[in-house]
Length: 434
Image 1 (tube, rainbow, N blue to C red):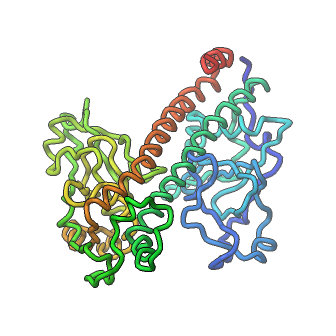
Image 2: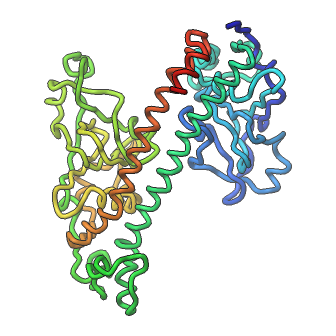
Image 3: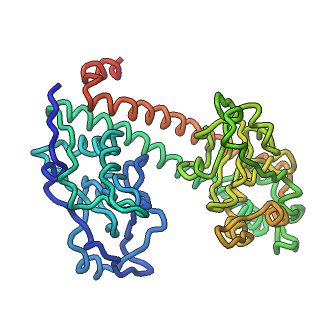
């Protein structure tokens, strides 16, 4: 396969930026995405802490705006991260990023997208960084980035294969977001808004609920430390209804604790990339000797893990036995409430949890401050009915995550080999077709 090295700029028909300045923002309007919204494990930009601009600012302040199919490319902080602009484009881009538009006469746009994400090109970009504290890949240096361009057929196969695998992963992510939202909506209806209780109090059948489940709910309220709650339910400090434990980190200088490790070891970093609150694996593993250095030991499947610092608020349900570092509070749900209940309770009460955090260098909530937080405790039969509703949703999330992980491994393994010519297109077509 013949490959030509071509400067990045020669493959583009346009580069859109926003003048390298901070634009005026507003409380509402058109989303303004920043570099934190661009991730190489997502197909399209995310909306993470997005700010907004007014229509007037959108129309008059910017030099231009991304079009569908443009590549949103980060130039500062984490240079080289890239996502595709969706159709329609419902955002504008902040500084430290540009939208690059592939010239279809020079390169297949989806191939350029896959190419920019390939390990070889990511390394080339990293080697061109300037700046000591904040890495920066200057737009003026784009022409110095040489990119390998094969024949058109190869470009189309690589680009389409990479995009289709990424699109399936994105579809799974969106499905999981919908499933998680559904589980949260059921929890809120039952345990926050008390919809079934209010319906019965008004002499009406609860909406979307069978008679057997409706019979589990009372038809009036009583006062508690949390205000009015369904009669017969009660309030307890969360430390009384779950075992809240912390973790630790075995010495990283002792290879006996890490080399050939078999036990999953979680850090908040493992949680930051989760697209659904399901922990399937971690970056690191510890040995039996390393596990012995962690006071909480190996936590069982179903443990709810909450990052307690750097930052407070990452949350997941462990689907594998796991041990945790000191940046977590783990909730072992072997008492009156289930893991599904506690996962959703924690999500609903995150503002209260974060309000209990303190610290000068970074916010942290200790187990001592976490355990006294008051929690509503419904009867066991009601929690069991809730579990029966949401367990299939979390099972679907887990399957989707497992599929996405397999697809990502296939995609990321094939990409550099296809680009380098180590693996030929006919071989992969036969493999995928078979």
